[in-house]
Length: 183
Image 1 (spheres, rainbow, N blue to C red):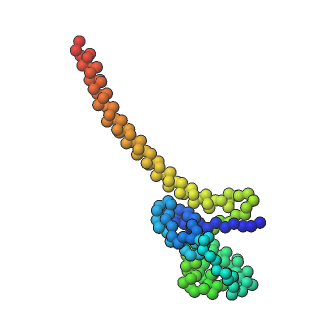
Image 2 (image 1 turned 45 degrees about the vertical axis):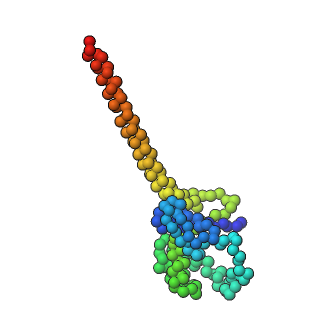
Image 3 (image 1 turned 60 degrees about the vertical axis):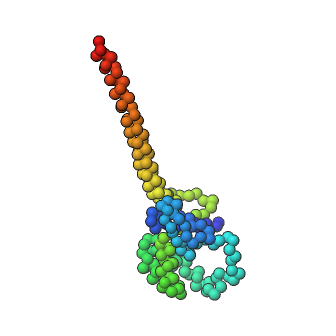
């Protein structure tokens, strides 16, 4: 069975989940409107852009790379838990990249979420919980704002009705009072 991977970028301002569009280096947050620069390792390739003809893995020792899977998993987990320095040390211990490149990679990993699922299997609450939690937080903030807005509109309408109806009622009761007092 194949495994699909979905990457979501978190907005640094509001924390909202953002799916980076293809071929874009920046995006506007749909929740708060902040401009967000998409790290290169999270950018999706533009489908119209030609891929280079050479192999992406040329020049790499595949035997070594196969052994790094567990270590890479630890780097990702450390970065996403906020332990960036430990993740940086671990990443540099098995890779030959510069410290600046390693730091950029760890920072990008810390600001992204990776959800993996296998098509055709039942989803469990444990696999969907992180996704639901981030959307629940967004829904709560939107709900709070909409409740305040609807209460404000209702209060304004009630105020307009009161300032229109009260003088009319005073006029009606005054004419009735005058009619009874004339006898």
